[in-house]
Length: 202
Image (cartoon, rainbow, N blue to C red; front, side):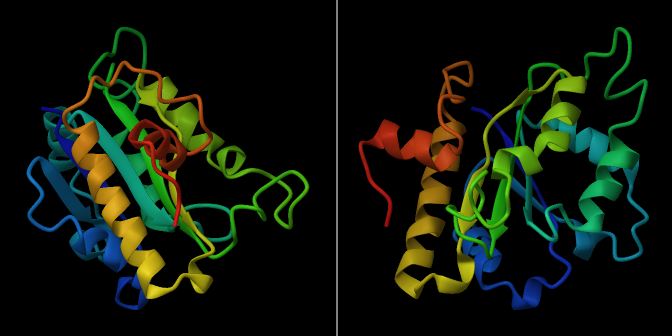
């Protein structure tokens, strides 16, 4: 079984309709550990040893956060800078994270169409996430496309429930599947999993 660690960061979680629904759907899921980084470290004083131990105990690492001004909330950057340090996460002969899987779960107010070279935001979602991809590759991790919930302001309650259920089902699948299979043929994990299930979007 692949153990999953969700590193969640949202500075205004109490107002986050989308992320709250995604995480509440996972309550009680076996093999999934959820860390609310802002709740754990309100002073940004991250327990590096604790975080490294969690990384070693899990196979799939997920950075879950809203896309704020084309980037992640500050806590995610603080976590990366403090925990993924030279000599432990990367460097000559360092293999602590080698072979682990990493990806982002993103929520964004902009629609999928707006994240396109010809769209309002001028770049794709994948291009905005290049720093995460390169960080994962530096640590010898296998970086996957993001799971994304976009156009969040327009989602109905039914659509939101559909995304939350899809997220749970996909993570449960990942916890038991062969992580070596091709998951990179689509720009989003959503698309890969829906194709694998023979399903369509909401």
